[in-house]
Amino acid sequence: MLKSKNKEIYLEVNDDALLLAVAQASEEGCIVESIERIPSNDQAALIQALKTATRTKENTYFQAVCSVYPKERLLRRTGIDLKRLRDGGQIAQALKEDLEIDPGQYSLCLLSPKDGRDLDPTSDTDREVLLCGAPTAAINQVQEHLLGLEVYPTRLEIGTVAHLGALCEYLRAAKIEEPALVLEVDQNLTGAYIVSAQGVELSRLIHFGVESMIPIVQKELSLKDEDSTRRLFFSGSFDFSGMGPVLLRRLFRDLQSSLGFHEVQTGQSVVHFFCTRIPGGLGWFQPVVAEGLGLKLLKPDYNLWLQTARIQFADPTMAQSVDANSQGLLALMGRYDHGTHEKN
Image 1 (cartoon, one colour):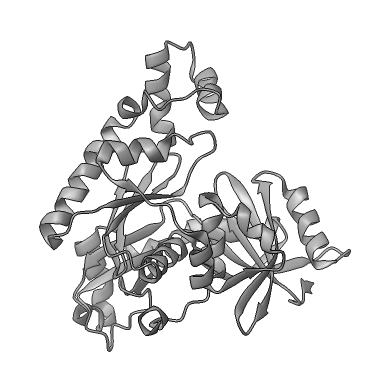
Image 2: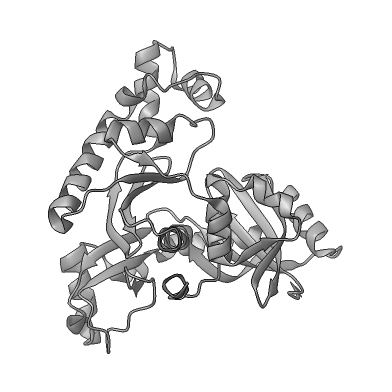
């Protein structure tokens, strides 16, 4: 049985936690009643939170708008001749040649890098596109995981897309003209994106993640094994800022290459830096990256961020708890009016 949607439920599922929000829709946008952070492996806590928020006692599936981060997800800005895609028989060949992926194994869509709208190969003439998707098997696995949490997704989004879109909207509203480097750090991979008020300008996947730093920490501190190293690394009790440039040397090299390529292609230097998700215990990461690359750490005005997304809180004091780790969930909830910023 499905629980009828008297309230809107939003759920972000990432490696670190489950972020749950309950909201009411209004003409002004979205009114948030509660936000809760739940350990990613605590299914019972999530179900209890859902029952409490919706005042439900019986066992049921809860309908929710979900944001997920499937493994091997793909978000790549690339040049594709849409004319080639108008012939359905050429789609597979074009994607294999241009992107070196097997489209038969992926669920994919084409988005505009300017505003995130769906592109139609039969009518659009854009030469630059955002290819968004993930292996179909990974998406099926995510859906099974959600059903195991007693959540029925009414909408399923790759969280990266929603977050980058919200950030571009914020840059427009804040009238920040210079591009920003945005990192999304996972266990073994880092998504690097250059965004501006004009949209997503560059995307790159770097084979370097949180786990890549563990062997370096172990060597630098002469620790006996990886388990003890990992506990120390994520404990937050040791300041790794001084060691940061050593830990991130390979990441810096790849990022500097991307920044240089972007400047050559556009004539614009990237000025700002922002990290969409900061792994637990790694509070030193953002300032070390910003300093190492000579970028300004972007510190969003969250009041403007919420206003841009047309999000309000039933209890205004809840806005004080908004931080980088809750922005992905808020991005999923946002309602945007393109062009409003220019009019205002």
